[in-house]
Image 1 (tube, one colour):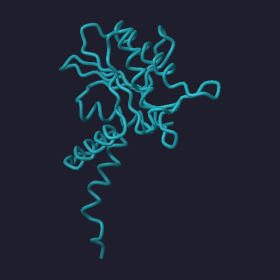
Image 2: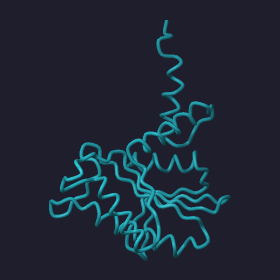
Image 3: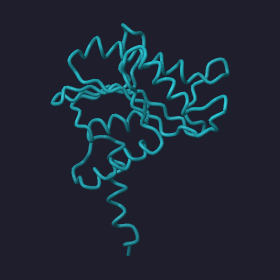
Image 4: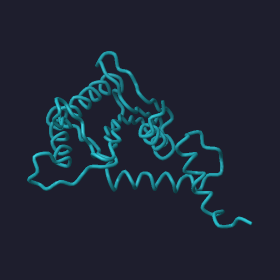
Length: 181
């Protein structure tokens, strides 16, 4: 079954970032896990290691024992991702990203605060590995969608990515809507 979030990220990395190799759902047996999207740009010798969480109504919400578990879940996932990248991509510039469209805004004093969760995840990873996670959320997520729409509106070739092909159809259709006989 197609995972639209992973398709979006894969398309962005391939068409916008110029990655020649993109793999979704990369199984990592030595770290017992899966990475949502891995993309390699050979020219720049860079690798993108991405986790994707498309939680719309709740915002970013992983739960364990009926309690929010964003920090533990994503700290563990990124720890495995970083171990994998360090083992297999020596000499590459490494970018670690979390793509999630909606981070809900809570009062600073709220017990559960998704923005604070992201800060804590980044702090945990920075302390353990000296690495920063790039959070593609809210406005930045929308900016990436806009960037993809701009790209496809200037392309006439048949784009192989299903999600970008849909955006391309929508963009070209705009100039023909209302022009029916």
